[in-house]
Every structure is written in C-alpha cells, then in structure tokens.
Length: 429
Ligand code: CMC
Image 1 (spheres, rainbow, N blue to C red):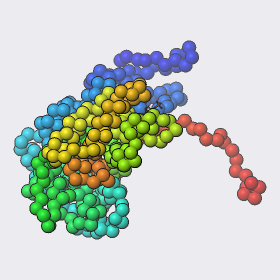
Image 2 (image 1 turned 135 degrees about the vertical axis):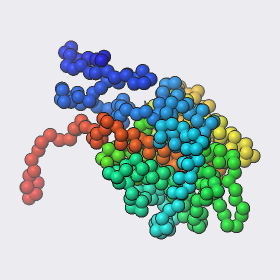
Image 3 (image 1 turned 90 degrees about the vertical axis):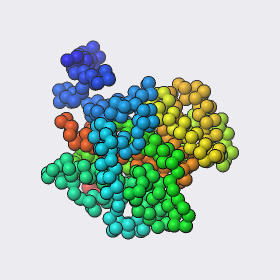
Image 4 (image 1 turned 180 degrees about the vertical axis):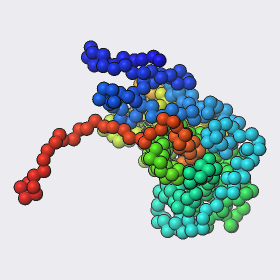
C-alpha cells in the first residue's frame, strides 16, 4: 500500500495510507490520524473530505462528467424515463421490460394517500411554502406507514417502504399545489405513467378537458433524471448523516428535503427566476446585474451560477438549456426571461471575475424557465427538484445501510470559545 508522509516543520510525524478508487482518484486515509497522533483535520464545508465510499454516481467537476451507476447522464436522458433511472439508482442496474412493468405497477399500487393525511393539507395556511408541506408530509408518512421493521425480512420491508416513498411523494407534491391554489385534490390514476400522472394530479380540472402534453411529459422525465442524483451534495449528505443515527428512511429523506430548500442548493431554481424577474421589472441591465454580483459589499449573487464541484460547464445545465428551447418552441412563445438568461450567461462567461473563479451556469439556471413554461409556479420549483432527487436520496440511504464501514456521522471541531473559567455566584456578578 502506498503511503504519504506528514511532516510538521522538518519532522516526519505520520505516514498516511493512500487509497485509490475505481477512477484512479487518490485519497489520504486519515481515519486513524487522531488515534495515532492526537491531531484532527480541518475542512469547513467538507470541500476536501470523502465521507464515504459510494458506487452510485461518478462526477468529474473539472471535465464536466456525470454518470449514474456508470451510465453517462446524456445517454440516460435520451434513452430512459425517470422510473427506469430511479430503478437504476436504487437497484444498481437498469430494469428489463418485465422488471420495468412490475415496478410501474408497484408504484401505481402505492400512490394513494391515507385519507387522514388529507386533513393535514387542508389545515396549512394558504401562504405556506410548499417545501414546508413536503418535508412535514414526508416524515408524517412514517406515522401512517410505519411498516419498516428491519428485523423481519428487511429487504422486503425496505422495498415496500422505498416504493411507497417514491410514489406517495409525487402525490404529496401535487396535492400541496392543489391545496395552495384552493383546488380539490385529484387522485393518481392507473391510466398514466409516473410523470403524466403527476401533471394530471397538478392540472386536471373538472371544468375543462385536460390531457398531459406529451412534450411536457417528456421534458419532466428528463428534468427529473437530471436531478436524480449528484453524489455527496448538501441534501444527500444530510440524508446519509440522519440515516447514520439509524433514523428511518422517511425521517432521513425529510431532512434531505429541508437541506435542499436553501437558495444555495435546490432553492436556487426559484431564486434564479426571482432574479431574472427582478432584472426585468426593475429595469436593471445585464451589465449592472453582473457588476452587482461581483461587488463583495453587495449580497447579490448570480443565482444559478457557480458550483462547489463543477469548474466547467455543468453537463446538466447544457441539457437543460437545450430542453428549454424545445419546450418553448412547443409553446410557440418566446420568453423574455430566457432572453435575459442567455444574455446574462454570455456576459458572465466573458467576464474576468467569472472566468478566474470558474463560475459557469449550473443545473438551476435554465430549469426554472422550463418549469414555468409547463405551468408550474415558481414556489413549486424546489419541490420538483426534490421529486427528482428522491431516488438518489433513497439509494444513498440504502447504500449507507449496507456499508461495512458505516459509523454514526460525528465530525470534530476546532474549539474557539473561552478556555476554562469559573462561575461567580449571581449576587457577585
Ligand atoms: N455569483 C457571484 N460570485 C460567486 C457566485 C455567484 N453565483 N458563486 C461563487 N462566487 C464567488 C464567491 O464569492 C467566491 O469569490 P472569492 O473567491 O472572491 O471569495 C468564489 O466565487 C468561490 O465561491 P464559493 O462561495 O467559495 O464557492 P462554494 O463552492 O462554497 O459555493 C455555491 C458554491 C453553489 C454555493 C455558490 O457558487 C453559489 O452560491 N451559487 C449561487 C447559488 C446556486 O446557483 N446554487 C445552486 C447550485 S447547483 C444545484 C445544486 O446541486 O444544489
């Protein structure tokens, strides 16, 4: 085994084992460093820390490569639908026709919500953010469907729980939207595929004929595939961390939903549209927006730009940009926000600040414009991201569950508070 040597000043203090992964990536194995030397490593934001071994997604941020279980994202988006990709992430292989059919049937069987859960929806205030409802309903599934008994036939129990979660979350997402617009809930139907079913639950109306637009169904499949996994991102790390305490799958996934909500992560798709609208409505020029984003005294950032791991064009953003043009062409309308987005992209990509820092559009830059064209309101965008990310979260939870090296997640810290002091009685303070 290769070893790296650690020196402090000129003195060798430790030999660190070197590990190599399947893609020839090199890691320093620091697991025993504290035990052997008393030192810990410091890495806020975990930008340089491998927290697990994983066989789910491969990402090369310098080359712009993204693969699920070895398959390039570009091929999956062209050749598969979302249910196949969910199966791939969770089971490790693409389904054959029989498995695909069985999986779809299973998803259909578990798509309804317990009638008592509907009361929860009705009682939420009308201004509630849909991510709040999604997270709360997600964890509430553990109360209504508590069958996870890993002692008894753990594989079957887990399969059932996973299928329920995948299917019912889609229903929860659509019902959340219906509740917030004050419309009756539309139950899932056997008649439709996974994505068409979702669009029908969202947009079916008793007063006008509604058939899911095939262009939208296709686009939704692609968008959900683009979001389906992204290795150890903030929300997936949250799922694995919660899972490491042996909390149940619903609880771990709800934590993932909460982590995704923030504008630096999945909430960026909502923030992008709000930023583009602000540019349009306040009459800010693209030049001014780029200047504001560069100004360190201004909190404004170019939402949908930059990424912790991509230092080149995000391959998902490339696909989303193309998809955006297809969906708008079907609509037969141009979109002023798309025009602003393209101009903004051009401007930023030629600006020294963005070039120096390798800041490119990420997946969220164009997806909001597509969701908008499909009639999905801005506050639901992050919910759409969550629906897409669900199989990834589940796959990581299950992988953690079978990981021979798994341990409860428990980082250390560099303490910066006061050294010991003693309590002075209240009357003397
Ligand atoms: N606009 C302006 N400046 C930026 C931006 C941006 N969008 N992103 C990064 N920078 C600057 C940042 O100020 C820093 O500059 P300096 O080195 O002078 O201090 C430098 O680029 C490095 O940025 P960082 O914040 O240290 O990078 P990070 O890896 O910690 O953060 C990020 C990554 C995604 C949180 C950040 O780029 C960002 O806030 N982007 C906007 C929000 C966004 O689009 N998020 C969605 C990410 S993709 C979906 C997902 O997977 O979650």
